[in-house]
Figure 1 (cartoon, rainbow over the protein chains, first blue to last red):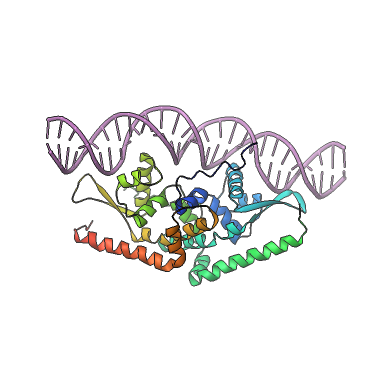
Figure 2 (cartoon, each protein chain N blue to C red):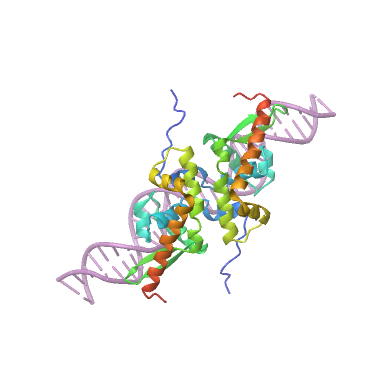
Length: 149
Length: 149
DNA sequence: CTCATTACTTGTGAAACGCAAGTGAGCATG
DNA sequence: CATGCTCACTTGCGTTTCACAAGTAATGAG
């Protein structure tokens, strides 16, 4: 009987520490960003598009994100080679965290994508709601293509 | 003519990426937390108190945080052995980011310090304002001991 | 002067990362 | 069903970062 979940074993009970242990690396949140804002769903998209993540690191991170319940993979019903990664509710709930991170760096560093910054600055709540709405729409859409498995 | 700031050289202009490159590791935000919430100011406090950071890593992180303008070190005028680390305005501006991270893990993971969670949940704006206020009070207090830099 | 304290540095091994190349399963075409 | 292509990975290997233990320089107390 192998232990499936060998216990989290955190460094401390601090909630900030918990978030850091899950998200505190150089890639996880970028993958979430691509799913949330750019509508990316496949390994290949993650590889090609953003900040040039290495293939093995990407595979690692996708595994970790799945292990933590932030994303779920599913086979593409129309192409058996493809895996479609989707954010879970837990994953979508990262939108406020990411929004604040964007606002912070936009205030203190020299960054691009000012359109995004302006949008979040104008109405943070609306931004998060928009992210949630697009996600919910995707969810219903993909459940109409019978994938019961 | 030495280059003081050898150019940031980011992986991308994305504001989220900028934040991740500065804060995306397992220790930086914990140090900020200790300064912001627990009023820690010295190397020794950081070492003893929280999640058992190694001495060399702590020295590294303090250097990085200073390099990024998030903290400033100053000699203790009353004890020349001590260095007092203080958050800058940029550092204090991390409060909303940290608050959202706390809320996220509190909603989805099994974490402690529910008192902090409750406080942030009850009124996030007030929480951030409180952090800011305590920080501002410290600033004026320490500036009466002449530190012009 | 000696001794403790504080803020580090150094050394060493382990783990994580980053790049290049390779593998295997699933379509697509003839 | 053979060939080639795409997609999602894995494997090897060198480099960087991390973690733990120990040591050191500067300051202060007695």
